[in-house]
Length: 326
Image (cartoon, rainbow, N blue to C red; front, side, top):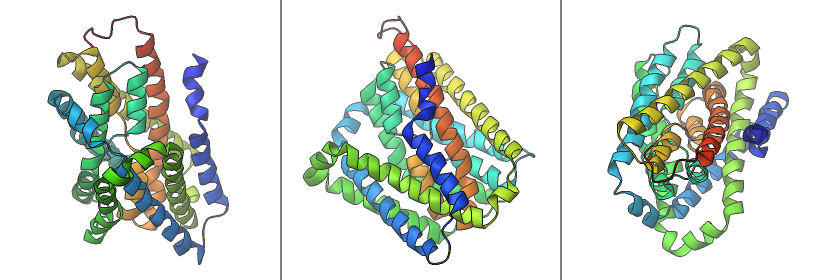
C-alpha cells in the first residue's frame, strides 16, 4: 500500500513545489520579467513542436475504429467536466480568480503520457488510450481557448481577448502542426530522445510556473490567499476528481464496454493536462491572474496522479481475466 502513495514524492512534484517556493522568495522583477517570459515562450514553442513530431499517426489511426469509447472520453473531457466546472465556479465561497481557475481547469484536454502509462499498468487497451489522449490534446489546442472565451466571459470573469487566441495559434498550434508535418524526417529521432522530451516538458512548465507565480507574488497572492482557502481549493479539487472518476467508471459499465476499454475511459476521461494547461493559461490570462488561475490545476494534477496510481494498481491486481467486461 505504501508504494501506491510514493507518487506524492515523485521528483517533478517536488520540483513544482520548489519552484513555487522560489517564486515566492525571489520573484522575477524589473528586467527579469521580460527575460524569463521570453525564455518560457521559447520553451513552450519547442515543447509543442516536439509533441507534434512525436505524435504517431499510425497509432491514432489504428485506434480510431473504437468510436464509442472515443466519444465517451470526449464527452467526459469537454462536456461533463465543463458542466461541473460551471457549478464549481458558482460556489459562493470561492474568490473570483480561484473560481476562474477551477473553471479553466475543467476546460483542458486530457493528459497523454500518464493516461497511457496508467492504462498500461492496469492492463487496459493501450492503443485506444494513445488514440483518445492524442485526439483530446489535438482538439484541446482549439477547443480549450474557445471554451475559455465563451464560458469564462459568460460567467462574468475577465474575458479572453482575440489577441490571446491568436497567441495560442502562433505559440501552440502552429509549432504542433509544423512538428507533425516534419515527423517523417525527425520523428524517429524525437521518439528516441525521451530524456530530451521530458526535460523540455518539465522545464517549460517550471518556467511558466515560476514566471506566473512570481507575478502573482509581486501582486500579493499570499496576502490574498490564506492556508484555509488553500485547503478549500484542495478539497474542491478532490471532490471534482472523485465525481468524474465515479462518472467514467459508471459510464463504462452502462455502455457495456470491455474491461480494457472501460479502463481507458476512466484514465483518459478523468484527467487534465498540466503540460497543456500551464502554457495556455500563460497566454490566455493577464500575468497577475495566472498564478491563481493555475493553482487549482497544480493541486488537481497531484491528486489525479495519486488517485490514478492507486486505481491502476487495483486493476492490475484484479484477478478478473482481461477479456471480462468492465
